[in-house]
Length: 483
Image (cartoon, rainbow, N blue to C red; front, side, top):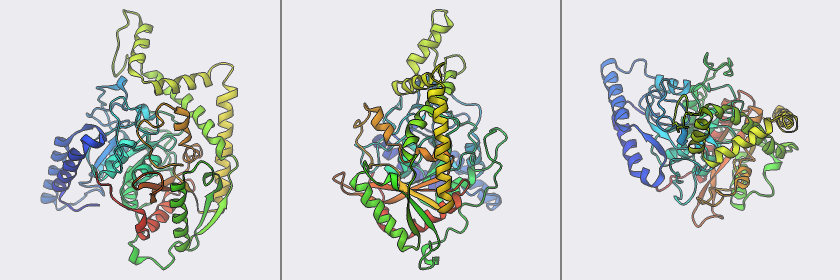
């Protein structure tokens, strides 16, 4: 990704980070001095040892979503209840970044406990979109996407439970990869929905995202749900445009999900996606319409499953083991109640209550069990479609980035924004979101639009290759924000 002038590169990114941060507020924690020291040490090692044994990310400045544990560095999940929590261990994904030589510059903002689609429910600050600072960057990995789009770091880690890497990538005009469930260890990720959560990269190019995904993928003894599946080199074979054949996607069959292209999708998003589809056809791909009748059922099923798992996962935040503690006049139950009242915001409480209700006696079969049955239908239907197609295609979200505060008080409207991404998590499949053009209809100035390609299980390399070919040949789809 870079040469071997680690300190100079890190310094350039830190200067941009510091210049843009008052407007973007991408980071909860910045560790500039530690980053400079790490980069300087790397340069000394290169000078003395000639660069032997350097990892693929040597000297690359990176951000990490603040729900992913970093040893010795505050990790809050953007929640007040975890203010001041400093983990004694690195998440496996972070440990692998460090082993590859990445320079960590800080922890990025998110919706508290990754519960949100705009980063407005952070307990610390609202992050702004670099393309228009009056708009949201998406969520929950909004800080990670904004930091990459604003060139505050070269790449970042996010997490994706129902679209939380891909939707911010779409809003901010960057690349985001949600890997197959189990491809990347979840050890050290502060859990939201354990059967849905995935860690993945955000970057300015498909190749950079592939290199980061290489570094963090693979089985892990600390995570029983991590897969033993072999990890290919996702960046291998990604060639510059001059090496392409005239129709480099010839033979590729891409299924356009019919249920994502109709009512409810803004005109600007529709126009950009249709232009991208024409470009894919010009590249030789065969596009065909695919109907997934259970597609709309995924949204309610997801919110039952995710909130039920959150209800269980968040029971640990009681003021006893870590984070803030509100005294309870000697009564343990009162201490729990006061701590949770003070430390958990309204959106987090809403989702805990929804999940607790769905799991309660008399309602489990009606809600949670039925949602799991729907999940099975969604997974089966998507896998059947992928037997006929090499990838499935859809917009990432029905609209471009909306204005801060526009839907903050309407949680149902915000939840609907996840319609096109959540089924991928329910099915455990990989997907990539990448810029495909701009919406020039919605706003006075252009806003990025992302395209989503969904692949077969452990087929990240295939969709990365298709996205890379598109990226290398579609100058109309890319730009850099002015912030």
